[in-house]
Length: 137
Image (cartoon, rainbow, N blue to C red):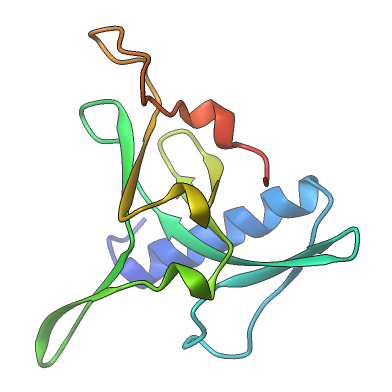
């Protein structure tokens, strides 16, 4: 797969849609790329806004996510903080595990780390294992 950020984002959204459908959700897609969320999901009379991110496992065995958006254009590189009030859930698609992980925004301060592998020092306090985030909260 090409390294292009847009391609990765599109793959993440498609994987999230398939996984959400499997979990029994109806997915709705905004008609613009400028919405602060990528999907809206519906189930049991409730709607939730979902921001989808594509992240690989780092060498430390974890997926890291920071509440920000980065992009480049003819004026250079830009970084903008995300307003977590504009979506309810962050879905992190990881191609290394081929899984989606769903984190409610109230669990994220500025960043979150989901562990794929258990910490080498056997730390348990404050560790968020990714397998605990495979279902929509």
